[in-house]
Length: 113
Length: 116
Image 1 (spheres, each protein chain N blue to C red):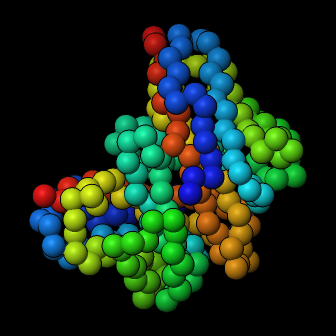
Image 2: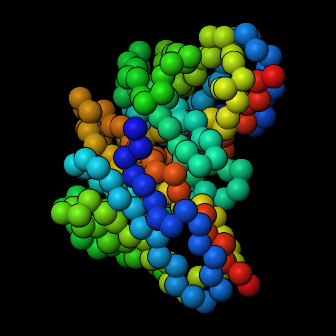
């Protein structure tokens, strides 16, 4: 079962514009994470927001979390061609002392130079 | 920097073969995970482990098994490979709850497995 669902599935913007990606999930979470994946490579962690946080920043990234709506958004400001990648949200809910992190299907971002 | 190493980048196997995918991490992480990634489906969790010799089924464990004899190594085993197991396999690791709650995952570069 997929916990996180990203929207849109694909996004194409011009360099310098902002990119916003949304994620919805179904059950209670400990935290929500965003990852980036360049074509054919593994995922790289971008930012983690805890369930008791509402907003977090890291460089050009801004993440919000609304636990009442079970949704999150990732904003990339002043996008660059190098931001072209797939972006995934992932939710973690503790399981018997371990962690089960579930990913959505991702948003493919294309930034045109 | 955390390093998660998957033994093969590309692998081609025949239907019915037993396949081993190896993953090693160098950060003494407690948790280790195996995902498969298919177009349009994102990453789906196959198995995970939060300690040596411990394993938990993920969402799609059928046709797979795992082994964690040492903390740094987590192996995914396809007992009898089938064509529907052609996929990208991604290994990841993270801190366990005692040492790092809310710990992000660190991924290897993946193994692209083709079963013919």
